[in-house]
Length: 71
Image (tube, rainbow, N blue to C red; front, side, top):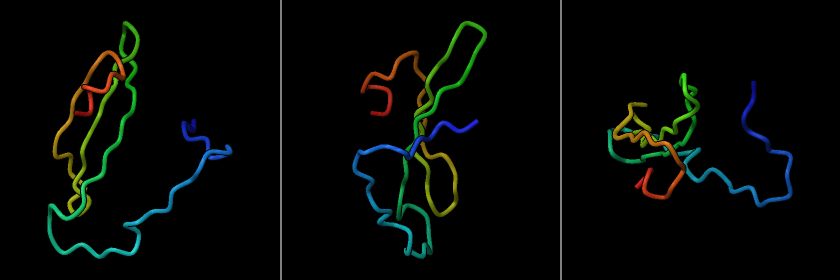
């Protein structure tokens, strides 16, 4: 199942980090938000990921996509 739909007329931004070679941690962090199905519905997971180690630096789980979730 795919959740990304790239067939739209919205602006698509280029990947500014695609050619960067990382030599240590804390050089580039990425963020992602996804949903997780639970018995009573869904919750949302916001994560900050270190691009060198591919480890989650921080995360938050919430019932809504309110702006305070990723902050």
